Image 1 (cartoon, rainbow, N blue to C red):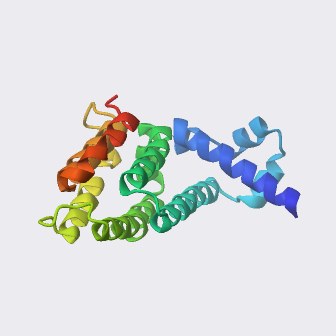
Image 2 (tube, rainbow, N blue to C red):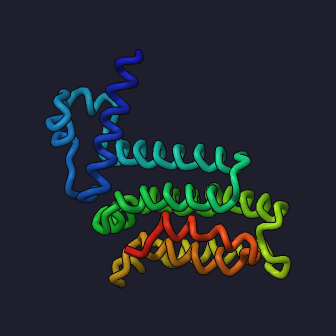
Length: 208
């Protein structure tokens, strides 16, 4: 059983990287089997279609993100450190995803893209909201900043900018887009005292 799980996971991880690098439409299950050195029968045993394999890869990645966010929400570390880790995590995932892969997701698997978008709205942003609420209790944010408005601004900024259609129309990188969103929203919301520690963010996320 362990060997079967390992084989399945190896197929998922390899295919996910491949899909993210060159796009869903450019990869075949037969090609994945050949490059992994496994039989086509083995690949089709676990994944009858390429869409099934893509879905497994995306869901695994989202589960990993959610698990890490839950850990961060419960962590006792300073808010700025947690914010940096969130940025690192999101940036790592975005940097692996080529524009071709993003467009393919929307074009060939629109339902899966909707699931990814729903995950951001319903799972990721609420956890960031929980981090913000905890930071508020620690006196990190200015008293005149409304937390709900801040969360809504974050949600609509990410949704409106971090999508294939918008990114493909501009020369800035996903990294710089995400960095600017977080910098504008959070640096402006912090108290003067908390802003002194914002240099950790600047060092961790220099403009590319």
